[in-house]
Length: 531
Image (cartoon, rainbow, N blue to C red; front, side):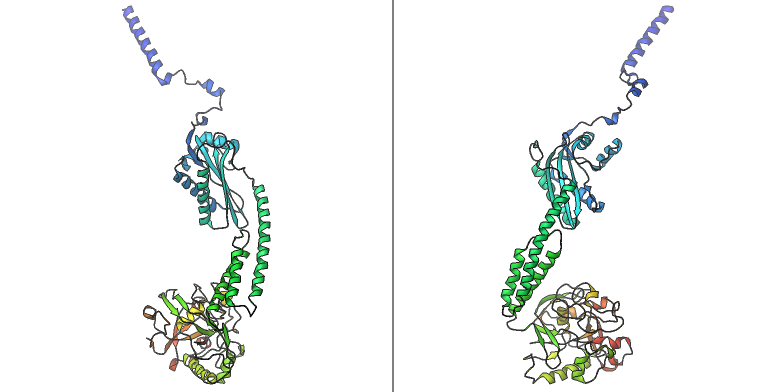
């Protein structure tokens, strides 16, 4: 019995030894509490990940003062996308990269070269790292990218670019840099970096030197600009030669100054003058401006052309016009008195140079009839044919928009610089020509007083309007109603838009002269003529 018990005990002991040998719970390699405490700094998460040379990490761009995260973040994401699209490396996911750095409590900010890159590369297990900076000096962004060997910390390729631009163009710049970076990195990496890393201080010094050079170029540009301005004032020079002078100026100063907008302003002026003198060359002797001897009215020649008439909710359609003259200013109280002998204006104390107002469409036609009779047989009259008239609605809008350009108001998009309207008029009219003119040199086509045009009012006319020289509908859908344009001192900014087109009674029992206050002092007109 004792021998049998002893045999069972030995068998049990042997099984226990086997279990201890194969069970991980009893592994001899498991560190004891004593051995763990003797090396507290060594943990499993700190072991470097095995490097994979085909993997690459893209760090967020380092930014300097003046560059917001709203700029750097989309730039960094764009760079990641371009690296991935290149197909040269396997890109480590940003989320995984942040997770590794978070677990290691690794501070990535400022890590662009050297030992910091090596440590980051060991943690991520990548072969390459793309890092860079974006800075803003003046109005110009400077973008620099480097391809770095994660094992040695050396720069294998570097590309830089500058951009006086918005975010979309800056992203395009980053795409070009990545393409350049990928091309330079093909094949075996060079032993030494192709370019040295430039510190922010060195970059600022370089920019100061570059700005000084650009300042000198801009001064030279100003001298040439002023010479051409003086040259075009000479009366014995043909329009063709004046246009060529501005062309030569433009071609001589094509480079864009990233530190200033002065050069842009001069180029825009040169472009405007080239177009102006080219038009003068095509006019075949027609003067750009004429002055009527009977009234002193000044007229501006508007070169014909085609444009998209209507917007701001009105049906847009193409219209083509012949050349015509239009009043440089609204008809004034002094000019009205010279022809009619009275002054119907509400603001008659404003003076002879203020626009005549409180006149109906019929009143304007009576004025035109008397003016044409007075100038018909005048040998000193500047016009040799045709008669004074109201402009058509198409002529009015084409002239107001500086020859059909995309202008919200006549003269641009800044209403306060071109118009007297409810917010700046002081509840009254003002002398003509005090605000900025449009590009044709015509004043007050937005604001001051509404202006009659010749057309009957039909809200659907734009859909049926002929393309060439439209004269308006043959009659109005509303009795007596004609089109008004331009807005007034009493009305808001919307009313002053160049495309806005209300209607008003042209006369009869609803004549503007019979209206009490308000509208009674807001309607005037300007003249047109075909030569």
